[in-house]
Image (cartoon, rainbow, N blue to C red; front, top):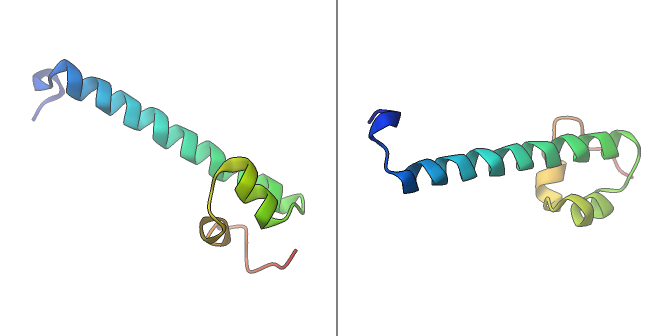
Length: 66
């Protein structure tokens, strides 16, 4: 299916998905920066909306204890 064949509703949904994905990526970036600054995963979870499990899976987490 070509983008030109999409209905208006499909295109709006696609745009919303892109925006949501960008917000998630930004939350991950912020979480990594906060971890590197020494902020506890529990506080990060409350501030950025990621679960503790998601934070523990971040590439910079490396099993650190805070």
